[in-house]
Image 1: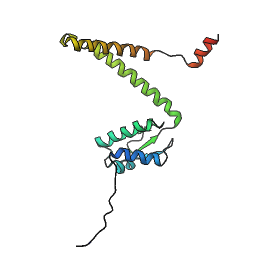
Image 2: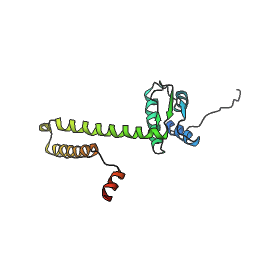
Image 3: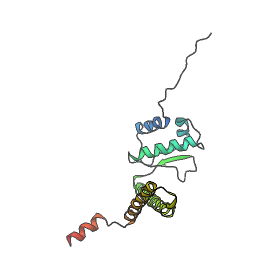
Image 4: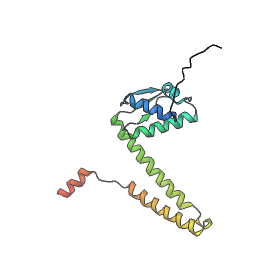
Length: 156
């Protein structure tokens, strides 16, 4: 038998963490573009697969704690971009909008749930949760004055 060398690649699982580590080690920066192939190679998944999408979501979530947002919007599935720092404001506003919509959806569901089919304990928990969601939804939807306006009104 012939003796052959095996060039085996050692990967740490999960693969998305390896990919994230590589991105961070190579110094992620605003405006940087990554091809879909970059992620396919590192995630060992095709871009149209569920695993690829889930792993991209995990990478995207992890990058938030480093101040970066990875976007695939407008790239036709061919590439992903770390949005510019100035665009993070729009991303934050979108997150806020999604949070408000989710709270309102929870209130709508809770308000329209038939409580007559719940046990006493389930009903108590349901009403408590609904009350919390309604309060949070109301508070988060309120317009909050900027710090500058608040300070000016105190000085007046």
